[in-house]
Length: 220
Image 1 (cartoon, helix red, strand yellow):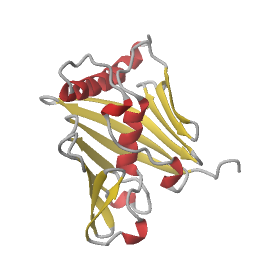
Image 2 (cartoon, rainbow, N blue to C red):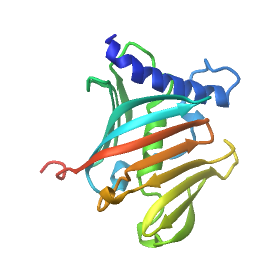
Image 3 (cartoon, rainbow, N blue to C red):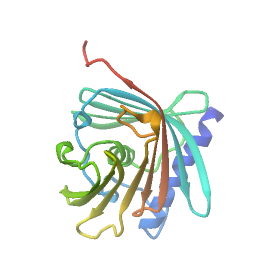
């Protein structure tokens, strides 16, 4: 295995091993799609075709922290998430398209979580979940989506917080995402920074979006 892959792979292994430990008696249990409830939205729900260059920093335990670069692309009916090594090589590639979810792992280390876990976090953070036409300039709104209560808080026309809570109470707690926009984010779909606190699994992901590029329509 190329040593350049190890820091970001260890980051992912640590985060999702923690998730397994938080939900199950043994952290060695193989995680399945059913361990992370939620419904993937179709990629076209994002609307525009975009490419985001991002820095992802994972936080867990008593101050543990690791980071890696990532690229997220939505084009047509396909959503692609790529985890990059420090040298810019693809460590993993996750794809959602009309045929389902698939993954490629370009390391010799087994990733102990399904691709759907990462795609769900991406969608919970960056995709629309409640009707855009009903978004207030300031205040709170909520709705039920796929067995979850989704609460959004807006301020000055921007989404500043989003919460997901299972109506069944399982897992207990909420996933809370907070958004920081900044002046440089004017006219962009992605905030400057998004911080996802996963109260179900006990980890935090900070996503700094460095660039956003609008892609031409698929097939043009």
